[in-house]
Length: 192
Image (tube, rainbow, N blue to C red):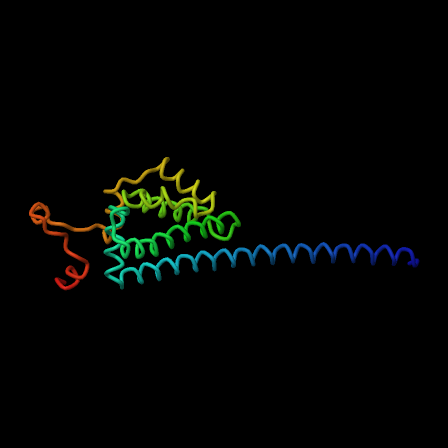
């Protein structure tokens, strides 16, 4: 075998090894991306459950959210502040999910569901009052996605309360007619 033949054989082997390395790197990147996607999916869902747990552990905050979902503009400053802590988290979660969906870090369905979750809240009477003034503070693509969802697939207030009964203010029609207010979250807890 001549020196030239040996040279060509080593060149062919080098090219095959380089191609093999590139294929291995590509496969590893796909695996890493799949792992990152699963981790991000798990993390955003875990934060959502932690956030709901925190909301349920604070009855006054829950009551403020209940009231503001009905009438944001006529709510007290304290109620608005507690509601805004809640609703800003809802919108920011939708924004994070939108970014992650766009980057392929969570699946399409989860990204859409977080936008729908925000749209459901903002479609309530008080949520709409808040959203009409506050949407300028959020990323345009998220505002457009939420507004589009509210237009294309609006959720009625009754549907919202069926899906999230903890936000419904229970009231006795007889006592409401006599001027009594709805029972508070604390009163409901004491009854149980």
